[in-house]
Length: 286
Ligand code: C5P
Image (tube, rainbow, N blue to C red; front, side, top):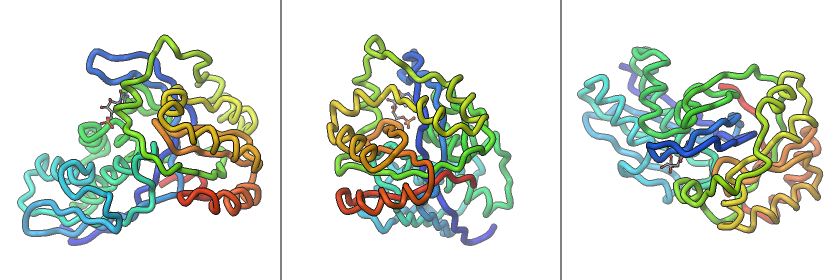
């Protein structure tokens, strides 16, 4: 077994998020386009004699089993009957509690990293299964790139990498709990839901204007009630030239889509003076 691996764990944004219904297992049935972006945590995994240890440059990152990276290491160790343990260091750049799958992408990196240390013992299907046991967004974070996700988020249809998206991402100071946002969602109040078919047509044509017009997120209204700053950021990004703005996942991060890098960079130069957690980013494929 290799003793050490280091890998990037990219954030995810949702370009559309349609809630199709509530399931009997408590989860929601989704139809969502997910996209990796080049805002990444850096994960280092080192073999240890026993146990799992997680540490980070960010004191808000839990070091116990509530950390999804910890859970992932435990799960893959059990699956393979490993006798040794792992020390995991998370260099955190992705905002926490932000709707960017920060915890899920760390878990995905741990599964991919430990599998790499073992010379690729497990196939992709097994890694995706283990990922889903950790969280709904983990399978996508393993697969990467761009995908249309259904079910809880684990039924993945990879999309060809088309448009290179230029993004300004802003996280308001507040954090939101995904479970709480879903709990407060009232399905009967949903209207003007995302049209994923129209989105995909625009995606395949590389039509940025058509694409921007189809970017919608059913969770936005609920998250705005909890964090009204989302609206202020959306308006600010439009005033700085964004083609369209959208909350990612359960929020409260907001993304602004720009037609070119220069426009995005100019907007970011201004907004980073107003919001501490502002990032200039673009689409990424592992
Ligand atoms: O799967 P994960 O643990 O990341 O999900 C966190 C919470 O988000 C779940 O407990 C559930 O309340 C909600 N959720 C949902 N439907 C999904 C994904 C997440 O209701 N498809």
